[in-house]
Length: 175
Figure 1 (tube, one colour):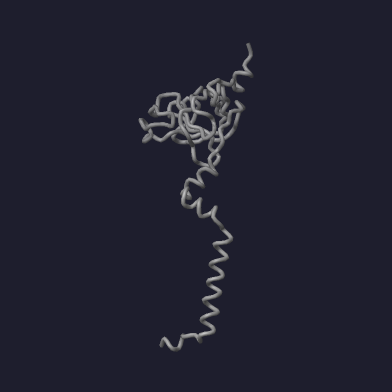
Figure 2 (cartoon, rainbow, N blue to C red):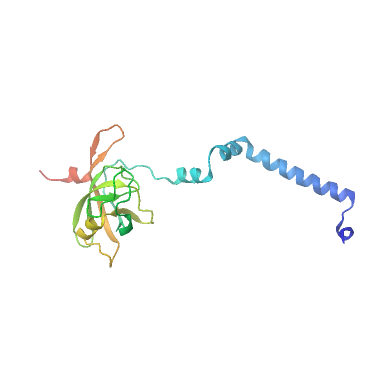
């Protein structure tokens, strides 16, 4: 049976030569940078760094969906090191700096509350903030509806140099 599939010597040489040339071409195409990256960084680090949102230090109002932490997150450590308090004013944002104070307003009901950004998330498309259950309830988000359209208006935004920038909420306030 092996003889049925054996190639003549010339065909074997041509086949092996084309495989060798193709392999050499691939290595030359990717070069040393690809090899160094694969040794130094895992693919997950490369993907995470490319998709990590940049901090928003603008202090501008943003609009999107808000949801709230599930019960099982109570007591878990948040990004700032504190424990998630379901009765506290804690919230999560992907882009607002930790320590930012902001007014969250339910667009439909007009109800609002002030929160402190202490965690990262939510990681669901279209959602811009996760709230503690008590804050969510205060602005009209319940177990039944679960998500609401909100505005997030910063009051104060901590800056990398240690100073604080006043947000839209403060600038728009009337004396």
